[in-house]
Amino acid sequence: MNQTTQQILSIKDAIESRHSIRKFVQKPISKSDIDRIFELVRLTPSAWNLQPWKFHVVTDKELKNKLQEAAYGQQQVTSAPAVILVTSDMENILANLSDTVHPGITPERKQEEVANLSSIFGGMSVEERGQWGLTQTNITLGFLLITIQGFGYSSVPMLGFDQEKVKEILGLPEHIKFAAMVPFGLPDTEGYPHHRFELDKIVTYY
Image (cartoon, rainbow, N blue to C red; front, side):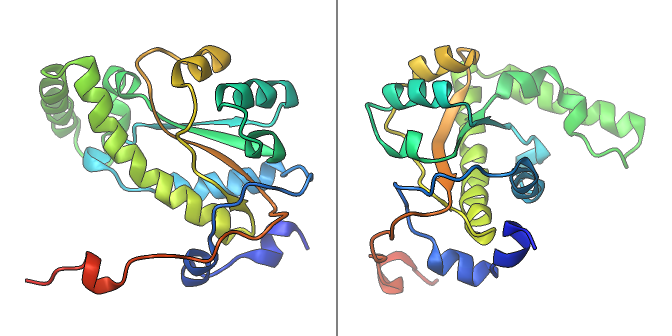
């Protein structure tokens, strides 16, 4: 029985057991496990179904060393067997809007949808589109963290890195936005106990 089948967790258990982990077991993650994770993560909802996210999975040791340097030497980058760069690329989406429209609608309706979206986003600057796409990509980041945990792995989301240097290392276009760098693998340490606000501090009923 493989790693995935043995350790699938319920959503409740995945959320309750998730901690940020910075030291990982030195064991590669199979591509089939990574594919299973992304098969679920790709179902993340987004406004107008635009799905502006891209995932760059780094397992190469030399590249991880470079990413660690770009992340100011943080050890979890090279400790983890895999590192995911979660990015948003709205310029790619804008160039391929017809791909985002549901295939079940009529050609005429599809043409209207593409024209409407082109008008909305064409009136924005590249920076404005990038920030809009990032708000959607942050949704998929949450899905990714819980899915990784659900399959028996651990992770840590990071924004403490030189984004321009990472773009250069991976050959990514200048306009993309980063939601996070996510090292992940089997945990080799325990995370800190949860310290979260009580409901009365974060929930308001009307």
